[in-house]
Length: 101
View 1 (cartoon, rainbow, N blue to C red):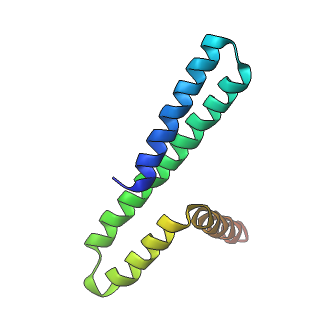
View 2: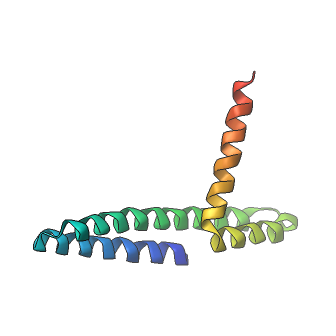
View 3: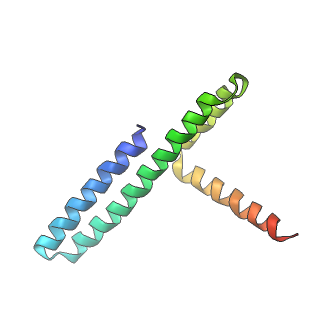
């Protein structure tokens, strides 16, 4: 289990507690913060699942590519927002190329 998955689950739990306390006390701001943290935690945990899956693929890759692939996974682990932006940008470019036919 990656750090992102653990962090995501912790944030999700924190959000659930905040939401519950907000409902109990009638504090809508606390409820909103709790919902936000739940969603944020789910996103971070999901990213961690993706990283875990990619690491399994790297382990199955030919030996000559593993070192470079591990560097990519390490980058993705350190810079999740940048990695997400890069992947989204590539997806937009590929989608645009597909429409030009």
